Image 1 (spheres, rainbow, N blue to C red):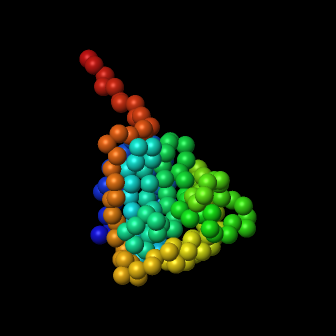
Image 2: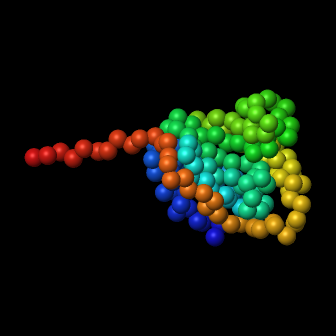
Image 3: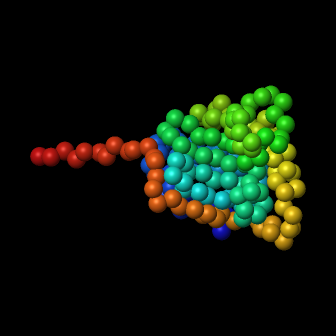
Length: 162
């Protein structure tokens, strides 16, 4: 399964607001439209729900990702972002590899610039694949589900009593 396989991701995003769910799914569609042969690796981690795209099934080959941490924004990131050019200095992060932008809504998302960064990130990712037999195409793979989670809380709707 590939792009059409949304069951796990939708389930994992349930604790988040409708706006964050829609933004994450919109960003997912953005990536799939440009890289339909990449593989989506889904992680339901302790502190985030994340999906990364890779030419293989390995996280080390991931070239871009989305991550929902809270009900305010979504990260759009580059696993090896420290190794790609960022001439407009939009990417955040000071660690050894991951770089990202904060996406508050789709209207402010810099599509054209991100597409340029994705192209370089994808080429960098492909270069990291030493065994080209590892390349697979167009799959959605749930990689991990953390048993303990730190997630936004959804306030239950109270039923009126008579």
